[in-house]
Image: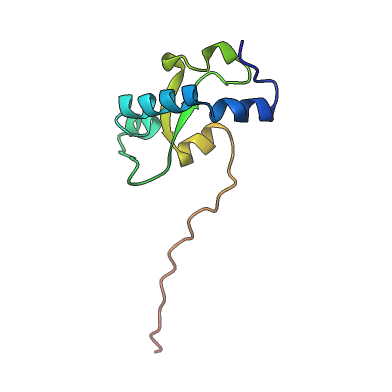
Length: 103
């Protein structure tokens, strides 16, 4: 069985050729589009964002599903971060209108 007990063990898995091949397959299967954005009627592709392959059931909890294609989906980086409650990226700054008229 796959060892997923530590971050180091999971890193070894994510650098394996088996994972790389499955990741490429899932991206192609999902037409290089974020499945959550697509569900919401928005198209987010590799041209718009970094695409990541997500384990629906967590790898650390379900190592037996590590390479099960029914447990994998393509998500954009923003959706993947939301899914895992990781908001360690900068939010877009608001557009501030400059009014240089002096009355």
